[in-house]
Length: 404
Image 1 (tube, one colour):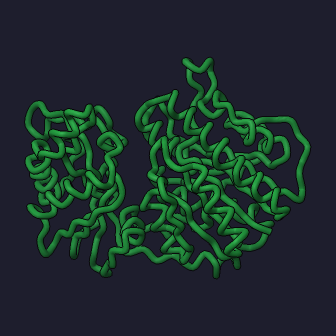
Image 2 (cartoon, one colour):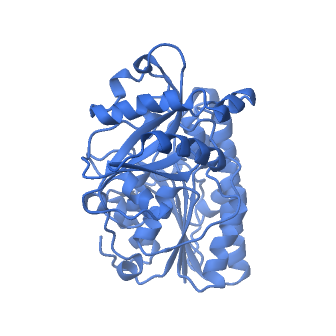
Image 3 (cartoon, one colour):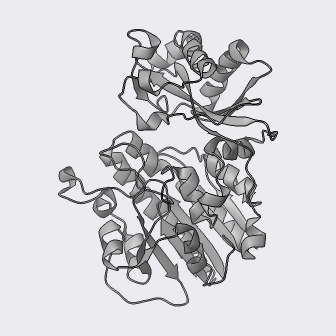
């Protein structure tokens, strides 16, 4: 038996008037998800423990079977694992986004326009982070390039200070959201002076792209310690994702990270390449478990694009879910598949919420026969609710006990 998680980041949403009261998941044309829904268990799962922030970090830990209350030490330390940055016990890791700020007024009066700087390429980001590093790095603060707009700063003998995620405050004046820590605030302000008129940003502006004209610190945390996924579950697993957070979780859990060419976390990521990489790992390399993470629905939600969120969900259905199911059935390999978002990212809010998410659990050896489609409404109507989302993986793995 093989086991697969297909996770559409931020895929869940709210009913939208412009969609006739449907959610993007309901409005999307998803024939494969709907076909599976009629043969699967549908339900709702709480992936965000009460009192914790509704982030992809806590939610994906839960989906993978790690109780965030026990294992979560911050988002950025998980990304440090992915980048391969060694952390000391005294280090604090900070996410260092490249963001777009408005240009009028003093720094504190500017608005945050784009948390991803037009989904900046890693190639462009390397140049800009190097410029910041040259001016701001010292024995206390060290800068590391990640992927796209997502980068890392290590703070020697730092503190886990409260910081605001930039995607939570899009369109807002930044004054009240800046760090209370004087040095962090000062570095963010100086980064604008370094980046706004940087030649690369001038060229980006000419191409109609948003300038990546400031760094933004958030997601502070200390060195993480995750138990081995294989030791917890008895299954040898792979992680397939374009984002450093998920690759970091995979690395921390002792899973193999599979890098897929063209997988970039955007709407036009290599969906089918991810699916085929998972199938190859399961069938050719004899892995037991594959976790396929697709970032695009979440990114489109942050951008506030209903049309592109629907498009991302349809790509997920056609290129990922369909490919995995058909390839495993063609190989006559029995499998169980868990399909779900990590958290909702409502278009209305353009940020995450802690509401429960719809899940679909399919077993190729025990197909059910029921009417229905895969969406928030249908899943809620079943009345099946997993209050502790980190236990949902037990259902995927056939009811076997997994230490949380």
